[in-house]
Length: 316
Image 1: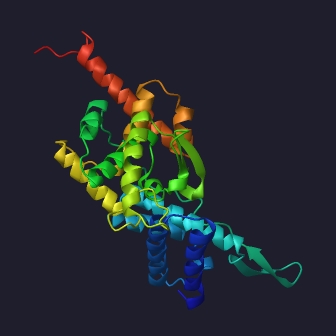
Image 2 (image 1 turned 60 degrees about the vertical axis):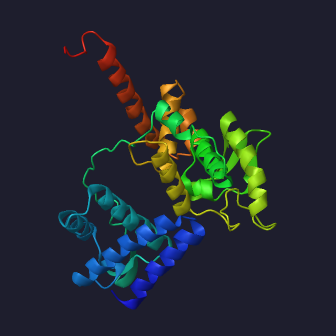
Image 3 (image 1 turned 180 degrees about the vertical axis):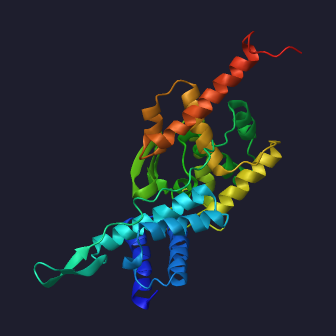
């Protein structure tokens, strides 16, 4: 690729960060995918983004899949390419000179997005893991007797009570929490704001945490959850603390923060909540993303049926 073409990768990265407000994880993933595309172009003798057509994009995806890249990763890679070409179209960078034989003059032809027509291989549908209600109760059934334990209990109660993403939790400030109204204001994906309820037990845990927080935090620190150094708690620190408590409480499986969100959605649907309502609480832009939890709900019902129905039970 020529240097001018590669410069557009950097411009797209800035577009994702500054205009679309994509998460650092999304920006890094797209950057890796587009670096792979640039490498493919260099190996194929393509020097400009106008040199890629549908057949070449399809070859790019097929080569990655044949090289061992999972179907879901190929889907993400094609999504990155589509977004990049949409950006190039917006910036009028997909133009190619063509000769109009009738008029006898050169015209500028606008190309289309070559990745739109390329389909990724189908990925097997993976259902998210959850903790059942008894396991969640077991995880949270500890009496916090240190400031760290008080904070960790508040974190886990809020994750489960409100179905927050890990990034949403770590970005919370004190001003986002309204304990009187029992709500929290969350900044989700795409910097979209939503207000979600906070349950009674989570409110109690937060009320215990706030005096402890005041002893650690400086006057200028806005974060709701902080470490002993008085600074905002990072995602990795939260992951470690959740894993610590899962081991301490004797849960057999690996427990991570996103498991609270999955459990939150699954338990609401099991209790009869409407899908649209759960979608709003989770902050999903597309209801199809929320519908995956209905499969978990069906699995739960199927297990009850297999255990209880006379025609389903196996004879011992």
